[in-house]
Image (cartoon, rainbow, N blue to C red):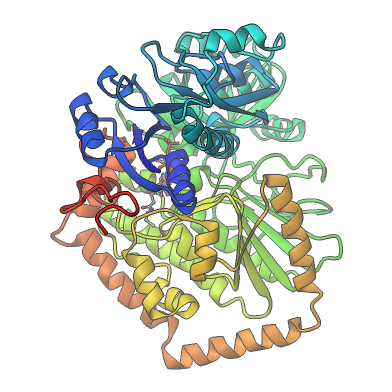
Length: 617
Ligand code: COA
C-alpha cells in the first residue's frame, strides 16, 4: 500500500512506523502537519491508499478524512479521548494501558475502532512509556488495521463504531473523555504529597511539559525525578546539619539535586527555568549552578550488588561517600555490576535523553577506567534504558557562554570515551543497545567489539541532520573497519532511521534479539556468559590486541581523530553557521515550517504515482 504518514514531527514512534512498514513492503512518505493546504497537497501528490496519523496535535482536516481513509493512532485504550491520554493514566496510577487506531471523523478520537492493543503500565516517565510500550503497541495496532483495509474496501469488514464498542465492552476495560491536563492538576504540595505522588506527577509530565514548581525561589519546570533512599537522605542531613524540611534542597550528585519530600526525598535531574535564563531543559545543577555550588556532593557507589565499598577513583568534584549499606545504593546515572561468576562486567550509563555532556563523558571515562581494573573477560556497555546514546549534549552546548567552545570540549570528551573503549584490548567489549541510538551515539557503539541490539531499536547513524556535521567518535576508523568503505559511504549518506535488523544486514549490528525489555536483558546476560566462557576467548582477545597494534602501526588513532576534528573545527568555528542554526532550532524545538525532502518523497522532482502492476507494461 501507499501510506502517507501525516504527523506533527518525525518522532520516535513515527520513525519506527516508517522503518517497519517500509520493511513490510509498503511505500511510505511523510508530511508534517503544518497547514491544511500543505497536507491536502501532499495527499494530492502521493495519492495514498491510507493516511496514517501517528502523532498529531490537531484534528485532520475534513477535506482529507471525508475523501480518504485516515487512521489515527491514539495513545490510549478504547474510549479514552483527549490530548493528555498518557498523563492521566500515569498520574492516576493505572495498571494497564493501550493504544487504539481509530478512523478519523469530525469528532476527535471518536471515530470507529480499527484495532487496539494493551500493555502493562510500567512505573516510568511518559516519554519512556511512549518510546517503548506505546510505540510497540502502536506498531502492532497499525499493522492489524492495515491488514483489514482490503476487506474493508471489499465491504467484507467494517470497523466498530465507538459507541457500540463501549456498550459491548466488559466494565472497567474502556476509557472516557478527559480534558487537557493543566499545571494545576500537576501541582506538587511538598508539605502534603508523599514521594510516590510527587514521582508520579513528575513522571506523568516527563519529557513534556514538566511540572511547574519553584527551586531556590525561581519558577521552573521539573523533570527526571528518581526516589532517593533513606540512607541518602540521612547522609545529606548529616552533611548539611540541616533539618529535612519538605521542599528543601540538601545535596547534589552529578547533574541532580536532592530534594526533601514529606516522607523521604528524591533526586531531580533536569529542570527548565522559567525566569528567562534558559528556555530549555538542563541538568538541575547547571541550571542553578550558583545555588548548587554551595551544596554538598553526595557521591553514589559505582559498583552495585555485592559491592562493599566504592572503588571508583575520586576526581576533583568527588568525596568518598559516607558508609552506606549495599542495599541502599540509590539512583545514579552510572552503575557497574558483575555476573555472579565475576566473568562479565555490565556498565550502564543512563543519561537523560541519551545526551552526553562533557562532564558526563568524563565520568564515563572514569567508570570505564574502573571497569578496566576488574578481572572480567567481557565488558558489556548497557547505555541507558531508553536511549543507548544520542551523542554530544546539544542543550548544555546551547547554554554555554561559547557554544562553539563547548561543542569542541564535548566532542573531545566523547572521543575520549571512544578511545577508552577502543584501547581496552585485554577483554572483549559489547555495546548492548537496549534503546535507540542516534548520531555520535551510534558511532560510539561501534567502538565496542560487538554490537547487540534489541529488535525494536531504531538507529540514526548519521550526522547530517544536525546542520551537516562531519562527526567524530573515530567513525572514519570504526565504520569502514566494520562494514567496508562502500557500505560505510552509504551509511553516512543516508538520513533515514534504520531498524536493528537492517543495521544487522549492513553489519553495523552483530545481533538483533529480544522482543521486550525482559527478553533482551535475559538473552543479553546469557550471550555474554557464553562469550566469557568460550574456549576461543583468549585467542579472540589476543587477536583483538594484535589487530589494534597493526591498525595503529598503519595509521594511529590520533591521526583519525585529528582529521575528524579538523572538519569539526570548521563546523564549530567556520563561516558556515548551519550546525549552530540547526542546534538552536533542535534545542528550542522550533516548529517545522516544511517537511525535509528525504521524508516527503512525494515532493521529489519527477515523482510519479507508480502504475498498478500490469498497467503500461
Ligand atoms: N542532546 C540534547 N538533547 C537531545 C539529544 C542530544 N544529542 N538527542 C536527543 N535529545 C533530546 C530531545 O531534545 C528530546 O528532548 P525532550 O525530552 O525535551 O523531548 C529527547 O531527547 C528525545 O529526542 P527526540 O528527538 O524527541 O527523539 P526521537 O526518538 O524522536 O529522535 C534522534 C531521536 C536521535 C533522531 C534525535 O533526538 C536527534 O536527532 N538527536 C540529535 C542527535 C545529534 O545530532 N547529536 C549531536 C551530534 S553527535
